[in-house]
Every structure is written in structure tokens, then in C-alpha cells.
Length: 108
Image 1 (cartoon, helix red, strand yellow):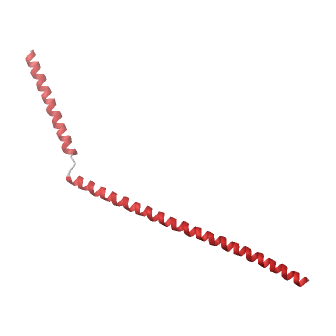
Image 2 (cartoon, rainbow, N blue to C red; image 1 turned 180 degrees about the vertical axis):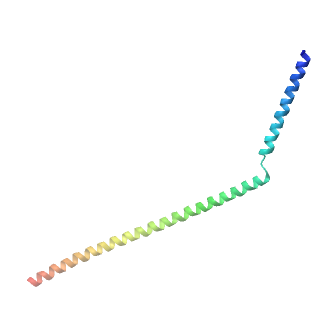
Image 3 (cartoon, helix red, strand yellow; image 1 turned 30 degrees about the horizontal axis):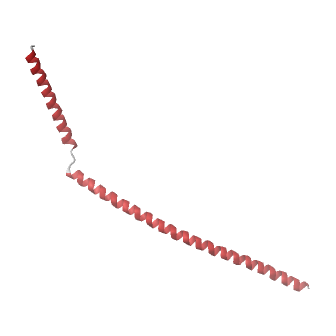
């Protein structure tokens, strides 16, 4: 094989390798191309995700408002309980004073 044939054979081999690489690249791009249906599906999924996030935010806001209301009610109930306990303590003390008074007057 002389020098010209070697150069020609090398050029043909490189050209065939280039063509095979280009064809493989074309196949990969052909099969991995994003279709309009895929883009539409992605848009629908993005919209659904956005709506789910809005719903979650509304639920969090509602729960925070509800928690504030319940905390307020608890504070009011505790204040009423303290007032009732103070009233009961005063009533017991007054009843004990009345008993003492009655016992002193019955004995005296």
C-alpha cells in the first residue's frame, strides 16, 4: 500500500466515522426531542402545582387564624377560671367566718 492509498483509506475511514457519529447524534436528538404534548403536560403539571401551593398557603393561613382564636378563648377561659376560683375561695372563707360566728354566739 503506497502513501496515496493510505491517505485515501484514512480519509474514507474518518469520513465513515464522522457519518456514523452524525447519524448517532441525529438519532439521539430525534428520540429525546420534547414534543408539544410533553410541553402541554408540563404546563398542566406546573398549573396544578401552583394551585396546590395556593391551597396549602390558604390552609396555613386558616390554621394560624384558628390557632389565634383558640389561644384567645383559652386565655379568656383561664381568666374566668381564676375569677371563679377566687370567688369560691372568698365564699369558703366567708362560710368559715359565718360558722365561727354562729359557734361563738351559740356558745356565748
